[in-house]
Image 1 (cartoon, rainbow, N blue to C red):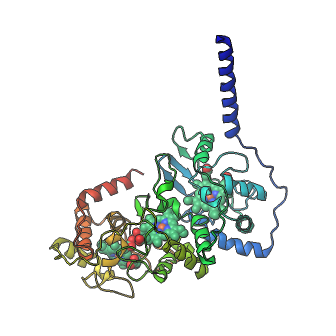
Image 2 (tube, protein in one colour):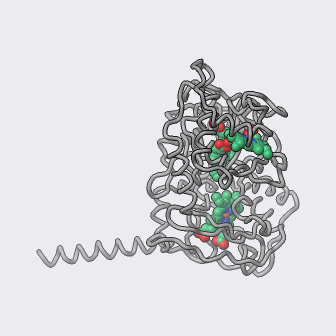
Length: 422
Ligand code: HEC
Ligand code: HEC
Ligand code: HEC
């Protein structure tokens, strides 16, 4: 009896090990002998898909060659570097047959069989259509090959052991391509496809759990990325300062939207990518987003309706005149200059959290070749925490006097420290 159960236990343990080994192992796919050929139409469509997926935002480091990788991504589990996805045979994906590329996009596995970290948003790309993935491949194979190897990753134990990602995939990878929802318009379905697929919007706009997976129950209800708050994309049409479709289209395309302002922080490169696409793509995304209600929908403070007296904030007002009014209107942040909305209506000033306003002041809006007039200097070195807090308090009092932000100076200090620890 005793012997029998021992045997049974060993058998179960062996099967368990075999299952684990099978789960954590993927075969290598043989390299191509000669470069892939693609037709011009596929390459052209692929350029649009690659822009929809923001591939260059991660795979091109500042000052580096297009798609040659090397951009560091800081995650709670360590720092990793994007890889070279130019068609160089040795350091890029030049020797990858199409099926290896499809497997990477749908399953997060590299050509040689190693698991890729989910900082590469394959969880979302897996929802793209076969045609879009084939076109993206054709386009990437057509760009200039560049010899460049990504620096070594610095992942912490145990995440430096890549096969563990297979367990993560078991929990979070739904690799079925999206199918249209019947009864919804073609535009809405297209918008959903772009937002949930290539656009991977929820990777920033959904809160993450402790192992870095998106909380499905709070889909698009707002997340945190690089110290910035990525606001909820649910309930935007019902917010106290509601978004219209034209405003949202303008914002998504990197313009400054009436009554809301423009994108900063990690959203800026996303919007500059969308700006390269035909306007119908942004219109479809806006159509889908404005239909989202969900549990995340929260009206937020009704700042527009607040009639409370504006508290006295002489220090903040004086700083504003000195440092900001040159660009943001003569001493009065209400004023509209060059079609730019007054700062009293921008999301950063009306949000529940002062985080994005503080981040904007500390980091500014970096100069980008794609939008040269969309530039604001960083004030991290020229203003101390009490100055930043006074400015934030002043702007808040103009935008939402009824609900001042508490403990501003402490918050500035904390946000600065988060940045320094990276
Ligand atoms: C948010 C950043 C990010 C975006 C956006 C992104 N990638 Fe990546 N990608 C990564 C990282 C990081 C890796 C490396 C992961 C690793 O080493 O585990 C990677 C790896 C890859 C690989 C595997 C390369 C190899 O040698 O194993 C391919 C293929 C790839 N990406 C294609 C794309 C395509 C195509 C797009 C756009 C549709 C894209 N990526 C967008 C971050 C990104
Ligand atoms: C890399 C992270 C990231 C990705 C990917 C991303 N966003 Fe954002 N998004 C942000 C951040 C951060 C903000 C806040 C920016 C600011 O305050 O200037 C933001 C702001 C926005 C806003 C303004 C919300 C408001 O209330 O002011 C909209 C709309 C938006 N994003 C839509 C999208 C859509 C649609 C996608 C996918 C196509 C997307 N985002 C992808 C990080 C991201
Ligand atoms: C050189 C011109 C310039 C200066 C100086 C400047 N800004 Fe800006 N600021 C911009 C531009 C351009 C934008 C982006 C367009 C927009 O959102 O209105 C912007 C955006 C903002 C936003 C909105 C960010 C968002 O996430 O939506 C805030 C808040 C802001 N500025 C505050 C300030 C404050 C406070 C100062 C002074 C400490 C200041 N700015 C100084 C040019 C400037």
